[in-house]
Length: 528
Image (cartoon, rainbow, N blue to C red; front, side, top):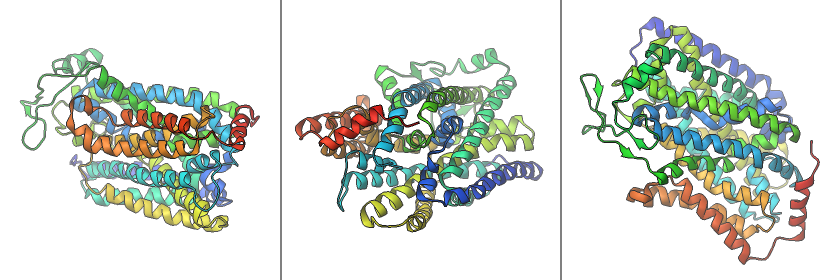
């Protein structure tokens, strides 16, 4: 979709975005020296993050382009319910994760022989030894698989943005975005990624609030927006979902400038629970969990929690409202679920002078890049530190690990490009699948590892495998059956993994005294 801007507008947009991208590139170069000190600095920043950087970089890396394109797109296309319950679930998940997981994981990751990646934490938590470490291997493979999908979703965001603005081939711009993210992550590692994510979180929330305020005024204010969308059945309800009437090409029918909707679809209790289950995903999100491990002091996590939840609530509320305002302001402009994800772009271009629009839309770049750099780095660590050093060559030095990690960065980026090649990909759908994968594979075992001493090594393996496998089984085989089976795959997969962990733990011998001693030490360790 191209907005058919004139050459002058395109130039000003490009200048504004180029300024932003140049600032991000400089950060990557500045932190290159710190990143190259050791693999711990490259992958975890030497555990030196302050509370503001830890909180806001966690949220920025978590939300991705989904926040500025995917979530407003869902609200624009089918109304309030789906987007709002997703946001509510995520807000609750954010708060609970920072409240109960952050401190214990920060302490336990140090007690567990200074683990600096999530697979390494699981492996050391259960004291895996020898040449074969199944937990380490399985967790690393899951990270590679699902982060490749996540990286692809971020590249889709970049491609859609530039294609819409400049009308040039989607794949070309998607490749340019991929190369840029790869450059500064390659150079600066975790610290550069965290600092840029902090700055990008500021850009993201400012962009959302500004577009919300200006869009609301342009649409005639709250009363006029409500009047414009109230006639769309189910559009403003939390308990029903709008049902766009589509033609043979799967595009919404627009008659006389008015989008056509059928009878609203019931949004019942089971659907609400299923959608709100997005919040369960936080317990297994490596990009967030790593910030808990990387903060410099346990005592600063309370401040980080407050910052994170405030940012999260403001950003997601603004994103949902932008989708609703966009439907009121330009009701028949975007007729497919994929095209609807451009509503933020449409509002920016329509409401701001070109240079200002470019600055505001840098928020989309910020969202995509703040996530893709995290995903690339964590996937690289899974191969270089966890599989290569942890299993294949345990005496590998830091220089070799750093080399392997940078090679893997390139390979994962290539896989992400392949996944993102289809320009009709719906960002929300791509992200939801990967989110479910991490949430179900890592979420339950993270909680049991931190809070139940009786959890055994076989249970950890079974829990990770059953959760990850059920995401695929439910999404591909069971969910298409519809009805009660149409729920979000994260919920049944998370529940299955938790049940499996408990059952296998009770059926296998209790953990060794050394593992139980580590657990007790993590509860009381004075690590500040």
